[in-house]
Amino acid sequence: MAHRIARAAVTLLRAQGGHLPLTPHARVGVITPEASLGTAIAARAPRARVLAVPPWPERAQRARLRQRARQLALGSDVVVVGLINAYQLELVTLAASTGRPVVVVSMGLPYLAEQADEARAVLAVYSYQPSATEAAAAALFGEIGTPGRLPVGLSRLHFGAGLDAPRREQARVRP
Image (cartoon, rainbow, N blue to C red; front, side, top):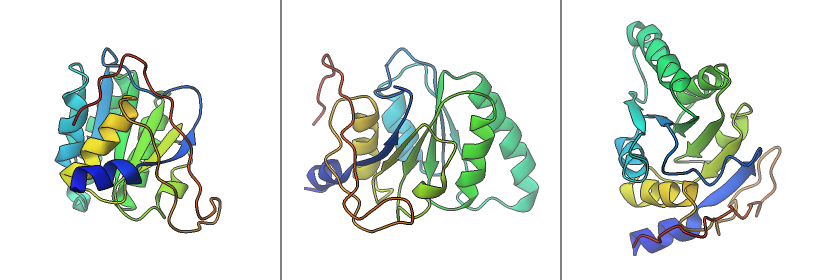
């Protein structure tokens, strides 16, 4: 039931530049505080590299994490940044500064997703439970659609907003 609910809730808030769906052959960099998002993406893209970041890194860790995130982005065709709090907005900006397209997966309240201005695509899944991160990965790779709609009004997005993501014809739908 959790998987069915998570798939029905996936909401695409922005899609610019034709970066979705991701392809399994792409070098996908994943920067996320939630390991299950990295696992779900790596299962679909064997060349994916995942950088797990603490949700609230200590000040002493931040410079090293920024350096590792920049290196990951530079070696990627596209960067997926998992967003659960304001700290990850800094990582979105850092990844975008490399010139690589950035896709944000907002895993909680959608209010921060609207602030990820540098992202080419923004997906909201409203939770960081494995069922939600699996649904996010399936949508990113075009295996499922994005039927969800925004359950709140934001300053730049109205209640009920949501886009239909492009799907890959050859994508295999996972249970």
